[in-house]
Amino acid sequence: MTATEPVQNWAEDFEIFDPDFVRDPYPIWGELREQGCPFARTERRGPTYMPTTFAAVREVADRTDDFSSFEVTVAPAPPAYDSEGNRIRSVITTDAPDHTPERRLLLPFFAPKAVEKYRDHTRDLCRQLIRSFIEDGRADFAGDYARQIPPRIIAAILGIDPDRADDFTTWVQGVLELGLQDDEIREHYAKIIREFFLEQVMDRMENPGDDLISFLLNAELDGEPVPMHVIRGNLGLMLIAGIDTTWSSIGSALWHLASHPDDRRRLVDEPELIPTAVEEFLRAYSPVTMARLATHDTMLGDREVKAGERVLLPFPAANRDPDMFERPEEVIIDRQVNRHVAFGAGIHRCLGSNLARLEMQVAIEEMLAMIPEFELEDPDAVTWAGGQVRGPRYLPVTFPNR
Image 1 (cartoon, rainbow, N blue to C red):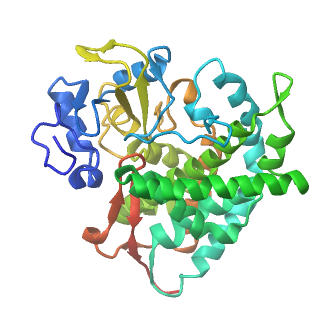
Image 2: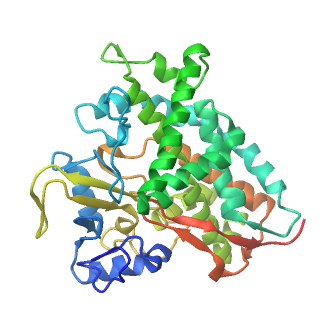
């Protein structure tokens, strides 16, 4: 079955890039669960399995001996190597025993107190962005707002030029969105990112600063300098994972508020509820699907998985499982019990979750404070990206002129 042929049987031939699935995947996951299919399968792009329940997703995430993080993309993407033959890898593509010390190295930069220092910067940025279109009476909340926030905050952490935000988002789209269906596009932009950070590393060697790049160059693992291929891999991760995921989460939350006026008005009246609502937006519109590779022949339920075959981790599917969440298809902005896995599960749970929450909270707070009334200009005009990261890419919204 080729990637372009329509899906006839989602349990045996799913296609994550199917336009209808990208636009609204939740009914398909719901039907698979109702059919008693905890693990769907496809041959497109090689044998791949897709859990559909919370328990099944957690099972794969927790079985780290059986499923490797060597390649986490939802479609095959060969690894890159440096001039010395070392795989350029990040903490999310690293298995035990290397994973734990490398993750521990990065954690201090993303602890709650560490990210809190970016709150005022994020707030000032959001206000500046909103002022740029508030008098127009309309805006693309995805492109003009959500897309603009994460690259500038990541730039501050990395000590790179925030004015290149459009470049950064273009590169990330090339790798994670367009590139997963086109090898040439992916490698083109992946190479740009690798070369960019190699230049940044060389610069910090001569001009160290108070940023993550300088920190990694001076840090140690087991008493030795952090290997250069690990530094380069994790810098690329910060850019790629730190931009698209949060951009998509902010955009999805704003899409919901634009199309659900009662929820929007309630948050305007009760801004103290926004942190709770953010957790529900994360649950209901989780952006990320990751992947694992089977390390040996094994079983997933009644599915036999061969060594090297891919297993997806669709966290959005897990977060809509009725066995885990009451009324899972409803967005309940004051939901109190909400043990979602929007940030992943197991040892590879997202390092940047505290930063993402902060950015989402501030982005929503400032939008509702400055533009409390807004609605979709044309619901049918909204476009979505999917596959690895799902979120709105064009979100035309209208509001009263200020």
